[in-house]
Amino acid sequence: MIVLLMIGHNLQKTSVQQQRQPPDNRLLIPKALYLVPSQNPLWQKMDFWENAFFDIVAQERDIVGMDQEPCEMIDRYCGLSESEKRRLELDEDRLLATLLHNLTSYMIMCGTGQRAIQQKIRRLLGKAHIGLVYSKTINQLLDGLPKTQGNGIPLKPLGSRLMQKQSFTVHEGSTAQDPLMFMEVSDYLAHAIITVSYHIY
Image 1 (cartoon, helix red, strand yellow):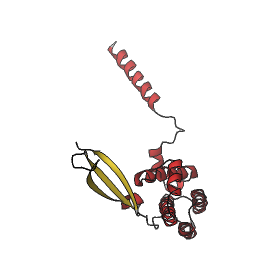
Image 2 (cartoon, rainbow, N blue to C red):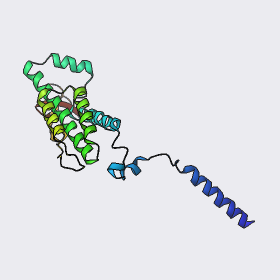
Image 3 (cartoon, rainbow, N blue to C red):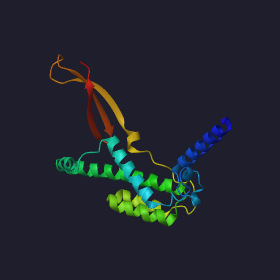
C-alpha cells in the first residue's frame, strides 16, 4: 500500500511538472537573448525595434517635461516668439536624433542586417519629421554603417542625463507667513521646467 501511494504521488508530481512546462514551439525572450545574434530571430524583427523606439521616446519626453497634451503643445507653441519656436524645434529634433543614433548602435551590436537597419531608421526618420540639421547626421551615420556586428558606434548621452536641477524654498503668497513650499527648477537645454514639490507647513 505504501509503495502504491509513493508511485501515485510521483506520477501526480510528474504530470504537474509537465503541465507547467511551456510547449516546445514557444520561444521565451530570456532564451532568445542568449542566442548568437545571427541565429536570434528577435533582433531581425523590425517591429521590435520600432516599438522600442516609440517606447523610449515617450519615456524620454516624460522625463524632460515634453509630455504635454497636443492641444497644450499647440497653444504653447503659438505663444512663443520666432527664436523660441526655432529653439524648441531644435530641442525636439535633438532628442529624436539622439535616440535614433543610439537605436542604430544597438541594432549593429545585436547583429541586425545593415540594409534592414538603413531602411528602418530612414522610415523612422521620416515619421519623426526631424529637421535638416539633425537628419543630415543620421543619414551620414547610415551611409557609413559597418557591415559586421560590433560596438564601433559610440552611444550618445540622453537629454535626461544632462538635466540640471536646483531646489528653492518659496512662499505661496507675498508674506513670510504664507505656506512654505519647495520649488524644483530643471534646466534642460535652455528650457526652464518648474515643478512645485510639496508643502512643508
